[in-house]
Amino acid sequence: MQLLVINDDPDDERQAWWSRSPFACALAGAPLHELGVAPERARLVDVAIAAAFASGADVRVVPAAPALTDGLGGLLRFPDAGPAR
Image (cartoon, rainbow, N blue to C red):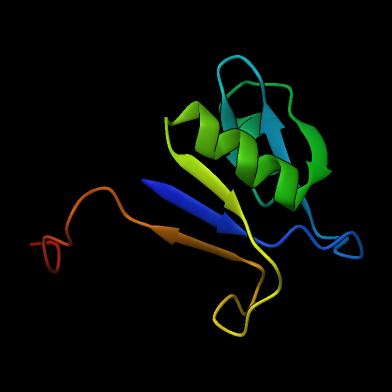
């Protein structure tokens, strides 16, 4: 991802899991445990921002907007290569 666009709603209680070293994140802890890391749980918004920074993406915090139905959006760094073959 090249750019994460996010609305940081303080009432958003969604959670995600992440690991500092090596950096990894997921919506559930099990996939990270399977990788052999000890994940921590945090707000989804915070994990998304950390993932964006870890990948070198930019982050823009914006007001609530209808186009951000889940409060998150991204612009991809690479063009879509089409369906996998």
